[in-house]
Length: 380
Image (cartoon, rainbow, N blue to C red):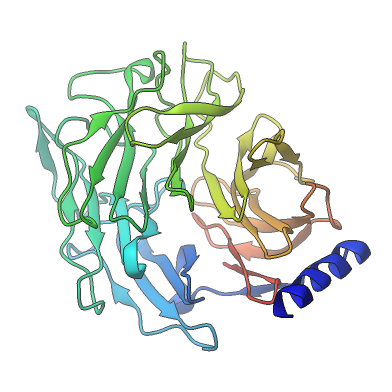
């Protein structure tokens, strides 16, 4: 009977094309760059940043399904002021692995000790995981052993089978040029306890990497690793690639969104999954687009009504298949922007006009998520 009621409710909402309610909530403690993940029990896991953009600190907090306040924050980085977020696409990222263990990566900021790769001292790529007692984080570890040259940041993904993937784009020391950069993957098979040295991802062809564009990775319910990555072939083909892999080594291109531009757009992107739907959002020459992928069906494109310079999209989907896409308008280097959002139905059609109502701090963006009731909350 419960399944019937849920199905009936979904049909009623679809028939009347009702928009989900959108609520806005400030990140605790004045933090910026929020990332929120819900675990299978509905518990919220929140990551956010505080401090100077060239070297600050990253924090973690949780909140239960029926709780109004987040738990007291836990500072993740052991080296003070070791996290950089300047440029926005360089900020820390989090994934949840087996039993809800949090895994966090970040590019070293002013307070981070340099590390030696080859014969060079370079900016580290730092990783920390929640400890076994779930009351703090283990000391951070540098992940770079062969490929350095961090610029556009890094990403992390994890699954329920003990796999953790730390991914970045870079090059061996002494190798210059975007066309010679590549995607690298360091994989753990024991919940992040140890990692094998990074390996260059096999993408099919020499694509390069847009140096200061960010990455986003997630593992879907079927165990497939998804990565959003911007190439830099021939210096002008800065195409957004949606890649998938079952082994963390060999990747297939499932979507390629073209953009011919001679300079790096300093872009970022977003992924979300629910049921049979995979959603991605990224920046294009004309602003922001989203993409819905379903097995055996042609991709659907989400086209929000952007205004001016629009960047840093984030996407979420609710139990009715409705989607919210958020982005930032008007932000520049160290300058505030405006948070904008728009809803879409499961067919990718707009549900109402965009909402523009909140000024964001410099270097920040929104973090949307769907509630159990099907409404949306945007942390900012």
